[in-house]
Image (cartoon, rainbow, N blue to C red; front, top):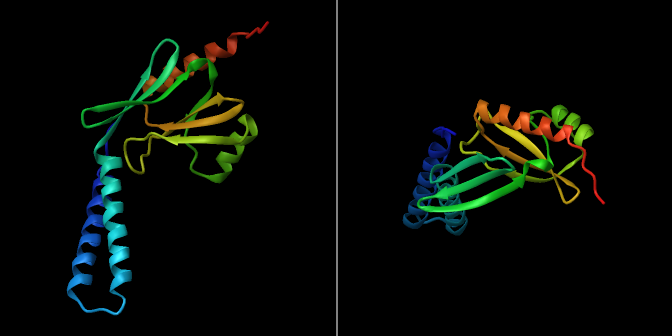
Length: 168
């Protein structure tokens, strides 16, 4: 997935505001300098958190024969953050933006109790949610697949619906 510039812009603004606030609170004689320093420090740290999350982190989405895998890359370090069997996949759909759309999905699949956001870009317009059954709960993975991956996942889910599971 492609990154957008919103994450880096937010990171830059927060870091600059936090840094400027820290410098201002140290140089100016204020009665409430402690509060200004705490707020500035919070903004500074939050800016670095956005930098780490949206600029330094990449996600790789893999759909193999049996599993859906998400790998998180930060620098040279790669971590598998999601590895789910496609046999447990329930649905894939664009991530609902309105409460009304979320309610209709809840009626169909039940309440989503587990949710993970593995999107690459901040405020992405092409987010999809894939629903899985996990320990008798509905889990939602939010990610940014290509159109080819969406159609491949839809095909795999349709194949799952044709299989009758028999347990002895």
